[in-house]
Image (cartoon, rainbow, N blue to C red):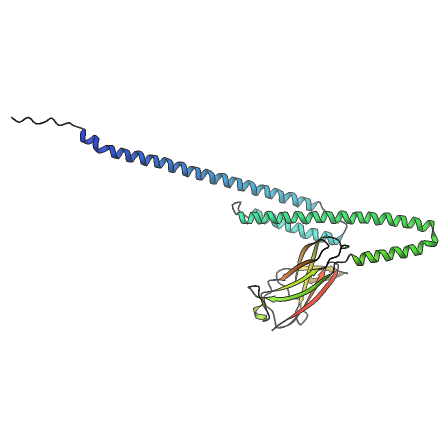
Length: 301
């Protein structure tokens, strides 16, 4: 009888399952790593969003603080108060835009931060201008009291002294006026290229230079543009500005506030959002809050 070798049970099964277990271990390790990576990404995103929200809250607090500073700022001068009201409105609108903006919109957040810095700078100029005017008023008050005292003590010289004071006041008033030059108005199309055909006009650009004047008050100055067609009608788009001058109300087509520091200052003002332009001559008048700076004209075919 032939004796067969005894079969070893279980050997084949153990050999077959060993690679499967290795694969399972590898997949489990990969799953753990992926889970850790996803968890880290989620945590990082959550942390970033939290930081951005905190930055937005801080920026809004700074805007509110600036808003309160503007509310507490006032003067005895109507022209400055009008400028203050305009800046207060800009701060309020900036806060509204920030509230409607997601903290993750970095482009707009950075833009609002720059606008906040500009409004802060403008407020500092307001404070400086008000302090300067108050100091000047105090000095003028003291000088006037001294002049009256001298007039009482020396009646014979009062008329001559009064004439001297009047002449000096007139010279200071005349010398402190901001003047301008280099007036030019051109029509532009949607690509900001100069055109002369009425139907191609998208906006009107007005260029000028505020002239150097060390005697003029420095700080924010609003310049107004009054654009009229050949029939004398005001041409205006979305922006509506009103200028009070010598008891008269002047409707302006556009305006712009600039920071004048007594040196030459080039600037451009745009008349936008006008539905259409007719053919003919157009006149452009440029004003400051002190009066007419100059005129220019252009023609559309």
